Image (cartoon, rainbow, N blue to C red; front, side, top):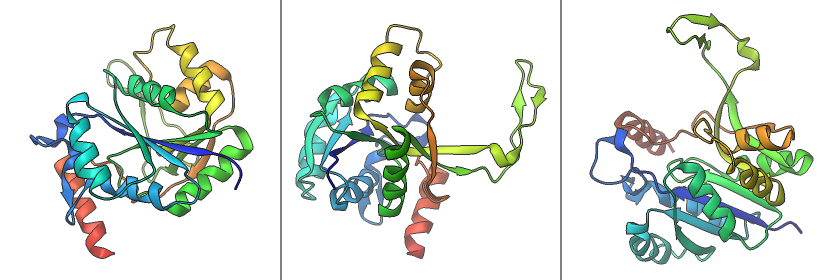
Length: 231
């Protein structure tokens, strides 16, 4: 394939909801840190040429020595400090890229990505320049008003829960981030939202997996362990 693809892996979260002194991305599942699994997927994928790892400044040396070097993740070309908010970390990752065609922005606390998900994402982003991985919602979703009452119930057939990676044309996502950084970013929750607001480009949905969970709470860690034991 001719396109250059870079993975930006975000691992700067503090994981307060995990109630652990160890940051969630460094907790172990089946003998490996959570972060290992997503890095391993990108390392082994022929679609990805390089990886930018964004983490907290105080653990950069740890990540280099105990994860990147220890597990021979040769595609990790840079380990850089993130920012105060997630979107700051993404922006730092974008600035660290070496002008790829596409970027795969992924939460390091999602260990269950695989080659099939990456291929579906790349196919979708090649069509529109913007793609998010997700799954149709299994549950009925209610939109609430400010008083906590049901405002509306959207058609469940049109509701997706969004995962990562989120994949974009590098030029497009850089332009969107540079534009929105001049405005109020307090309500920004993901990178697709930045593209939607700042460019008007249609963001394509591509199926991920119901197992592509984010490790956020102790319950998530138990679920992840169960998934690995099944495999």
